[in-house]
Image 1 (cartoon, rainbow, N blue to C red):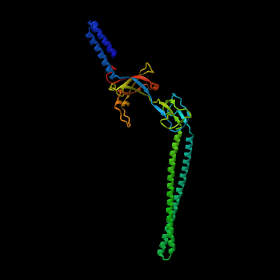
Image 2: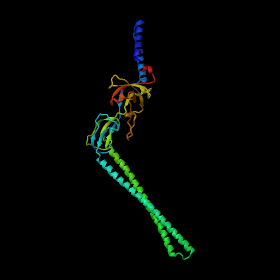
Image 3: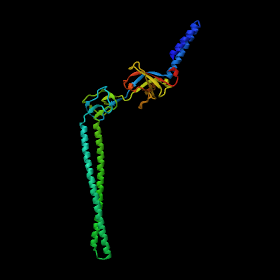
Amino acid sequence: MIAFFTVIYCLSIWLFFVKMKIKPNPTNVAVAAVIGVLAIGAIIILWRFSAPNSSNLVVARYTVQLVPQVKGPITKLHAQPNVPLKRGKDLLFEIQKDVYVNTVKQVSESLDAARKNIEQLEAGIVASDAAVKRAEAAREAARVELEISEKSEAAFAGAVSQLELKQLREQLNAAAAGVDQANATLLQSQVAKQSAESTARSLEAELANAEFNLDQCTVYAPADGFVTYWTVREGTMVVPLPLTQVGAFVDTSKIELVANFPQNVLKNVKPGDQAELAFKTRPGQIFTGAVDTIIQASGEGQFIVTGTLPSAASLGSDGMLVAKFSIDDEEAAKSLAIGTAGTVVIYTDTGKPFH
């Protein structure tokens, strides 16, 4: 647009002063200059709002702190810095396993013993249940015998002596007590089984934790990417604390293309607007893409929760917002190094002649 206007402007000046033979004077020269400056200025302003551009495009990727979940000395560093790795397949490093192997064995033995104890208690429940049935049968036999004797005594006085009746009643009471005792034994066996099952479940959970800790002695790549550097060497004692990372891992499975813009020029920008991107590591190449989102947050406007009131003198903003972009050529995007700089222009739906 500027080039087109410049051609028209120069042609108009030529026609006015050469073809029409208008004699230049301070007034008409000044008017011509003002018209040119105002027109180009207006084009630039419309250009900035209809097709905002930024020379602060940056290729960003997420980095992962490599912090182990178990403690112990490192026995082997497998991954070499800056060598591509596959998620869950390529080894990063190994931690000494001896303690964790012993823990798994110990808990496994305890769990086996607990399960055998449950089997014994189940057998005891079966025996107790049978004892209850025998006691109930004995009580029923004693009740029937007493009932027959009482009927005989009622029908034929003196047929059964009072001593015999007393003995039969005592036998019935003893049989009833035997039933109560057998039920109590059965209940004790059932409670003991429940306790043993609870112990077994606890040991199963403990074994799962022990096996998990053993698995964590072998650390794999958390994503597709590479290790940038190691902060440890083989034999270094590591602990599961966030402040003691063993290295930094760059996640290459997802690329972030971000650029900052003055807030006012983003007025007409919306997600999905087409964009063109150029990178300093790829001179002469223009990549097409689109606006992914406008990040509606800036650290300059963030209040941190502390016991100290914010200082009014420290408040302020550069008036910039960040836009995130997607690129059509995904394979090219994957090859861009983290921190690559570039330039981007956004083509909005407004002012298309000024793109």
